[in-house]
Length: 144
Image (cartoon, rainbow, N blue to C red; front, side, top):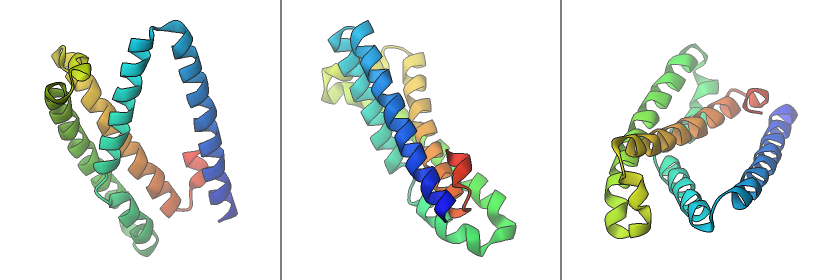
């Protein structure tokens, strides 16, 4: 349990430091408009990815210790489901968001942009569920 808790703390610390460095460099290399759009797009990916986990991460935390023979199939099924839901939500958001705010117009500039955003949402959902599954398996060191 101590290793799991320490891994969560370490992961949060590393993520925070890397995020700070990323945004510090971005603010010095790109225009304020580009940084603002990137920040909004990443925030939207995070929000959508979090919504797309459908509670499966929490479910896995409880079920994985109870079903040791089904762990791999439970994790795989959850990752495939949230990845697909994330992809769909990402596509819909990239197409609809510019109607709500013109600032999101670059999201649907091309099919590649739409798909890149959708893949970002999908990967966000997948990594959140995978992180929670690793915690459920008491394998926090892999998360770190």
